[in-house]
Length: 238
Image (tube, rainbow, N blue to C red; front, side, top):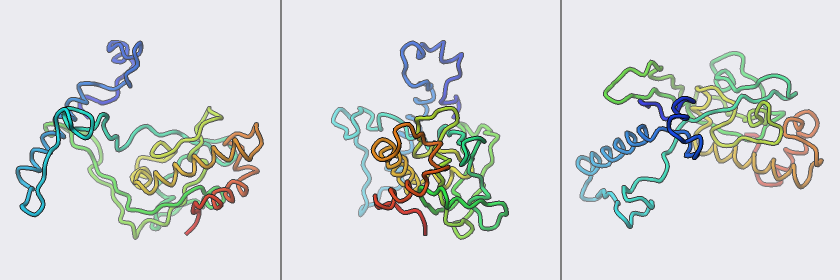
């Protein structure tokens, strides 16, 4: 976004949000996004509404979204911050890479031993356009259709962050590259990853050793955890 959505440290100090935490995001950028959404809604109603498919925009005090504008209270962030994970031995940095997804690239790894979820989709990646057609200096597109993508296994190590022992990441924040995120960010992936993170947390506090941390699971307890997933009705293979 232009201006960027996320404030820098200096901007955060100047805004007062560090003392009264409001999310660390730019209200100017949010306003631009709101204007863009409203203009898009206007374009839809003026040009795309049809007699058999009439479009309407619900705004005002009684709007179902709970805002006078009719827009949602918070923006949908398609791609946010992601962690750097730990490898299966908890010693080296881990991140899923494009080669782990592609049938037409060498170097893909087998994650079945630490599988916690499965997914499959296009690598659906395309660049952003700034306001007024300003250059973004980003790749315009880097897609791969699903017939080039192997059925993807999500490993536990992509959910375990560096430097924190009592935290599991779900949804879009797992340890993946920007390109891999184009596949793992879709709803089915997010739901499957979230279910696995929640199920793992429940297993740790109810069935595992009290002192066991997520990073220790791949070394000795992966079979037990995967059986717990299956007992919960989660799928781990194709």
